[in-house]
Picture 1: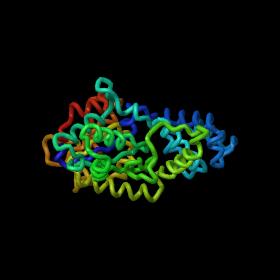
Picture 2 (picture 1 turned 90 degrees about the vertical axis):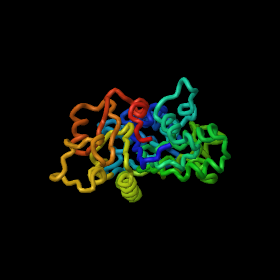
Picture 3 (picture 1 turned 45 degrees about the vertical axis):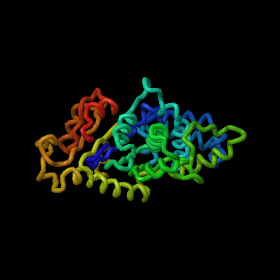
Length: 323
């Protein structure tokens, strides 16, 4: 059980163990999916020429992510969101997250058992999740694990998980059926070309795409304000699978929330050690981060990163002082 107010900030890297492509790999997969499913995208008004134009532009953009590609005023926003929803939706597979004991991967199993034991109610934890991922693997894992670990009813589990603070800052593929029985979108690999279910699945795809947000959307601006307040109230903040983009850190007001009296001139994070002060803990994974970036995070933002060889699962196992 987590008794200390704790916030987990999940980046794209947290989703990789569960079969989701990220960054340039996601862009490549979206290009392939659009090219191979032109009939489907054509049903949304994007003919072959528009599909080809989008794919060529995305390929030549040299952008590091689909989000950045769509962020600037873009005529590709609608087809881009459909591409994101289609590709990620195809990779939402229960078999990737609910694995046998000897095959469990990623951060979810460790998080779950810290949340559920010994009281067996998730909502009794002082914890919140801020995720930058569109997919719903966290919610799906928590629901399935609760259902099979506690033996409580569907309604009881739904009530318990609904009290957890989980915010998708840039939107989500939609609510799961346990969250919304009438509008919920199933968590599974979807076959949009299936003749008997094709029309229904296209409706769900359109609904998923509309739930995806970009940085300039008003809802995203509101989400960042909510997230900043959540971080402000937390005693411990953990970044898992996070890319540490400076614009994101600024929007979350990491400096201000790390130290209430922070100014560039008055506070030097180089002299700050969370183990020796009463200030809140800001710590994160540093998988494949260079030494210069890690130093910048420490000195400019007060975020302490650890062994560059530790993935999220190993990080939580070694630095689970959030309990």
